[in-house]
Image (cartoon, rainbow, N blue to C red; front, side, top):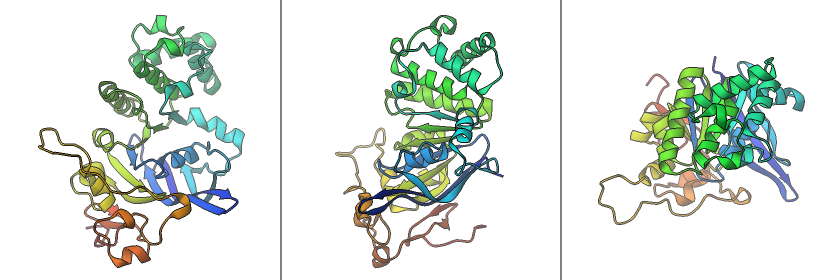
Length: 324
């Protein structure tokens, strides 16, 4: 049984002009200790999916259908207080900007200790010891001294390490990491990626890694789910999808990554932009930007189908039996 199972998830925004569908019929699972990368452009629905899993959708956003189960328990319909206990204890969260996760008025030690004491039975003395251990684990030098420093006294990369320590406070089974490396420079990004992989290995935690950077996914995740305009367009083993992407959108994402040593005058790009929620076209939402479009793409929306070891929602992909 997978650790996390999301089935046919719909996220809606009621407006005066009607119901806007931001995430439409998305299904995926994450196994114990697995890193699943979720990739796509801004507005694809990646972060909304993560927020729905931890029960933090901003109103008027709401789950309009489907189910979310954690270790076999359904969590998408839980009352706020019950979900609050799960959040932090069983599901940890790492956000893009560490300054939004850390209170500037409290020392990082106080924030870690309060979180540990909220979700465990440890005394304040043992919680402080645990906080120092966590800071050492995530690579904060001189943790015994720095535990009493404030967020502004840390660099961006070190603040993100503190946020990862916060996410680990109660040894959660699942971590939602939403663009954890975006605000950091490349060398620090690499360190944070290594840290996430280490957490999975040593804690056995599963990670849902949300990003728009296919390079980060290729370096970190075992499987990747590609989202476009609120739907899943491709999902499968990362190595397979990086080497042989099936969906034209995934092909565009892979082609847009610069190749070191290649003689290129300009970067390859996907022309156009993702449609607004109020203006999603009929058929495949990607068809106005697709260079391989056929008439069927404009008329009927494709579902995920098995192809070359992964699944892709594209009419150009030939369906294969699950066993190959």
